[in-house]
Length: 140
Image (cartoon, rainbow, N blue to C red):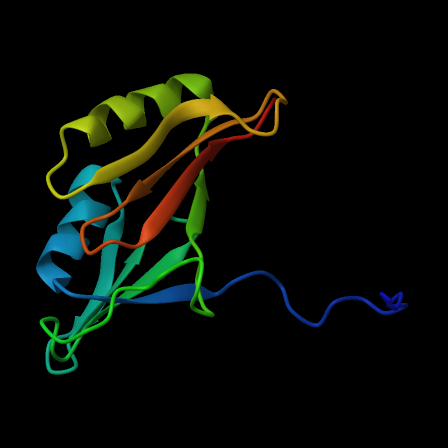
């Protein structure tokens, strides 16, 4: 049973999303060169890099031993199922899909399609390192 909350939420949206990746350079290149994120800073000794698209901040952390790291299984492991980004309309969604078709180490799970039969369209990829990302063009 869901309880109704009679107060305002304490939180105000996500501050950032932190992702552990097997190849920090490849993941940073994906976000910066492919998606247009800006580098906000980095901690080379950690190693980590902090990125933003002007709305969402992403922290990328290098896995200590990528060879022995276990890939996330979205159906059997508790944790981040996927990360979803909005894009500005159908044309931007289609343009991004076309770009990602030729981006190294990106696997497209499915091409742009209508979400739940409605007017919103989306598609899902696995970025370099395997983390699932959904791109959504909300219906106007």
